[in-house]
Length: 157
Image (cartoon, rainbow, N blue to C red; front, side, top):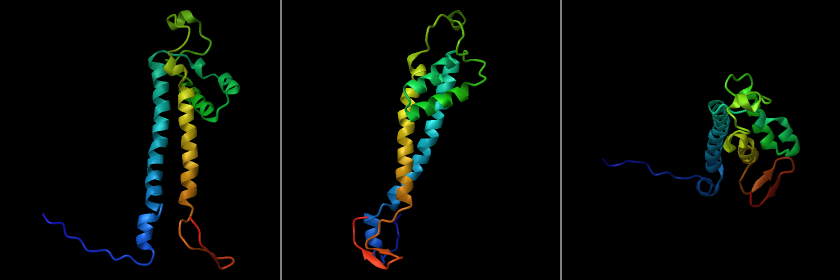
């Protein structure tokens, strides 16, 4: 089959906008960021489920760790783990004796350190969200006209 299409004639600045603007890439980034936020939530939920599956302890997510290493993302991830594991019948309470946990003195490394490796990802998502929000609410045209003073500004936005 032969593809039939009409030619597009661009108006003033439209061709430049298609080639030089950030609107399309910002829109794609915003959609990718939304998916990334969902994946971050899923990773925490699945990690909490893994703690339960391995009969791990809630103690690995004690707020003490937040106070001695107060990275924002680490605190958020640990708080989410505590929330997800609240009332769990499978995860062991924080101060349960070792005999009742099958002899493990501590949970497996990947689970007990999850706030430390999920936290930086959450911080990166927050930064990306801020940057994409700014870009979505900005203009990249040139020249720019200040409507208050009627001044015309030529620049690199």
